[in-house]
Amino acid sequence: SRKAMVQLPRARRLLRPLTSRAALLSRISPRLALLLPLLLASKLAVHLAARGKRAGGSTVSSAERQQLIAELRAEVSAPLPHAIGGETLDADTYQRFLQVHGWSLPKAAAMLSKDIEWRKRVRPRALRPRHMPAACSQRGWVVLMRHQGSGNLTEDEPSPPEAAAAHSGRPAYLPTLRIGHYFGRGKGGGGRSLHPPHTKPPLAHWVYTRHGMPVTYVNVRAWHPERFTSRDECTRFCAYHMEHYIRRMPVRRGRRVQRACILISLSGFKASMVPHVCECIQVLRRHYPGRLGVACLYNTPSYWYPFWRIFCGLFDEEIMSKVHFLPASVADVAGAMAWVDKQQLHAFL
Image (tube, rainbow, N blue to C red; front, side):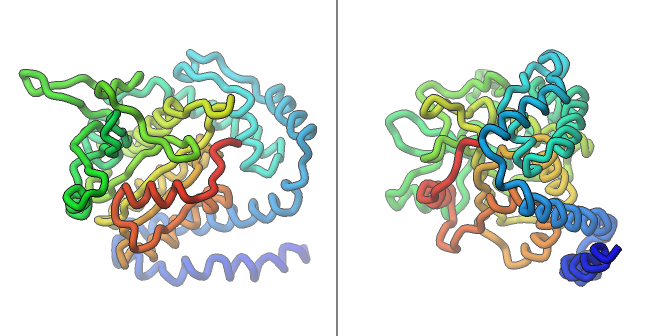
């Protein structure tokens, strides 16, 4: 049709940045060449979906939204909690799936149906470290805590800039807890396993942004997904962290916070991580829509941006609006938290 002929040149312009880098990425890692067709198709699909949202998804009234939520609940009934690992699908869940599709009932119903099938198979709320031992033995993804009275953020072993900060009077960083790992050492060197309800040291508290969003810190240099036993382990590990996020979401002003904050230090990023990052993005998009409040990327290496072109093709418009590259002056977790707390962010739907 004439409309399709008009869209074809636009699609070509959209995909040209990725196709021009195909040879470069193939030389960096031959495996990346296998991902290019999927990435090209994903970028085009995300672009067309975003155009559809802008065309008719922003004028839905409050009464119409409630009606659509009720219709989606009638079309896709919530499964019993024990069938999907112990969680319950509430009205906020239906609203999140509708929002990311511009309040399109057919698209939200299709996505939610697939998500429920995935939850029946993976059972993310029931995941424990024993289901992903290789991933949970690493220090790459950690939950920030603050000891009562000290004011200090607590995370994994400090990098040199963070260690220097401790001697300069800024918040110090102490060896601490990481999800799925162990805290404390008994006589035999063991400790208490950190799985739900996620025990933590006495007088310690989870760290939240000023807006009430729970915070997880990803140290890319300490993350080694190539050591995972399977691709499914990466999927389970990402889902495990998302469920931990949800458990930590507090109640503010009578409402439960719906979104989370992730801080990512990109120093040490490797080409071998690309397939695993793509898998994490797909888990976030397909099964936790609307959960991301802000993603802060800092310590960005000079070779990062060709890879960023790849990941952009997987982000939808909603996620893309939450990703921020922090100024070069931000070099540690304290600086990233200070930057986040200055922003006007939405922690609720």
